[in-house]
Image (cartoon, rainbow, N blue to C red):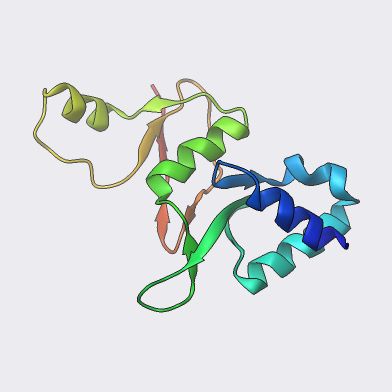
Length: 133
C-alpha cells in the first residue's frame, strides 16, 4: 500500500473534517506527504483550505466539483484549533447571539485577542476574517 492510500484511509477514519499537514508527518518525508496530498486533491477526496490545511470533500450537487463536507463557518475554527491559535467569536457575532443587536453577521469573523494572524483559511472565495482587541 502506498503513502497516498494510507493517508486516504487515515483521513476516512477521522471524525473531524479538517486535516493539518503536520498530523501526517509520520507517513513519510515532507515531499512524499505533499505529493500524496496533491494527488488526493486532484482525485477530489480532499480540498485545500489554506497552506497546510485540508478538508474532506464531497462532490457538489450543482457542479459535481469537490467541495468541503461542512461549511467554512464550521471548518475554519476547527483548523485554527488544530493550529494552536486561540480565538473567540467576533464582536458582531457576540452582539447578535446575545440579542444586543439585530444585525446578522455576513461572514465569519473571529477575535484572536492580541495575536496577529495573517493565515488565509477558506474555500471558493469565502474566507475567515480576523479581528483583534
